[in-house]
Image (cartoon, rainbow, N blue to C red):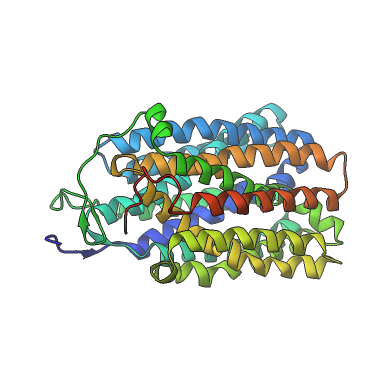
Length: 406
C-alpha cells in the first residue's frame, strides 16, 4: 500500500454516534408516550411513525444518491439534517396543544431522524476510503452507550416530569452535535484513491437505482432478511410501553428494558471489528440472526416484568453482532461507487420498510390480539429471517457477484 494510513477522528465520530442514538431513542422509543399525551390513539401513533418511515425510504434513496455523487464532505449534509430536526421540535414546543401541527412536525422530524443513520455510516467509510484508520466498532459502541444511558435517564425523567420534557432535551443534544460537526475534519485530498485493507480500489461510476438492483442480488436477499430480522425489534421500539404494561411495569421499567438492551450490545460492538477479522462478517450476521430467534423466544416465555426486562441481554448476540458486521458486509458486496447508496438502502430496509410494517401491523394487532400472539408473529419473522440471511451470506451463491476483502 503506497499511501500512509492516518488516524481518523474516531472519538469525535463516537460522540456524534452517541448523541444521534440518544435522540433516536427519544423520537422513536418515546413516541407512544409523547403522542399519547397529546391525544393520539394507538392506531394514530402507528400511522405517524409508519408515514415517517415510508417517507424516510424516499429521503434515504435521494440522500444516498447525492452522497455517492457529490464531492462535498458528508458532514455538511448531516448538519443540515440535524438543523431541520431541531426546527421541527422547536415547532412542537411552540404549538403544544395543536393536534395538526403535532401530526405534521413529528412526522417530518421522525422522517429526518430515520434518514440520518446511513449517512453516519457513510461518513465513517468516507474516511476509511481516504486512507484513515477509523475504529467503527469503538465509535458505534459509544452510540450504544449513549442510547443505554439515555434510556435509563429518560424513563425516569418522563415518569417524573411528563413526556413534554423530551422536546428541550432532544434539541440541546443536536445543538451539541452541531458544534462537534463544526470541528470535524474533512478527509484530506492528499489521498485521492479510496483504500480498503491493502488494496487500492479503482474509482467506479455510481449506479442508478435500477442498475443497483440489477447488479446486487445477494444484497437484495440480505435486505429481505434484515427487514424480517428487525420486525419485532422495531415494533417493540415504538410500542414497548404497551408490552411493559402487559407484564406489569411502567415507564421506568421501559427505560430499564431499553438500557439493558443497549448496554448488553456494547462489548460485541466495541470489539466487533477485531472479532470480524477472526470469524468474518458473514458468520457474525448469522449469529445475529440466531440471536434474534433467541430473544423472541425469551420474550414469548417471559413470566413477568423482571424477566422481560433482563432477557434483553440477548441483544448482545442479536444487535451487537449486527451493528458492525452489517455495515462492513454491505460495504464488501456493493461496488465502490455505490457505497453510500448501499448504506442508504440498508437504512431504507431496516429503518424505513421494516419500521413502517412494524408500526402499521403493530398498531393494528395491539388493538385486536393479545401480546403473546404478537410475540409469536415476531418469532416466526425471526425464523424466516435466519434462513434468508444464512442463504444471503453463503459465498457459493451468486458466483458472478464479487465479495471484496476489507
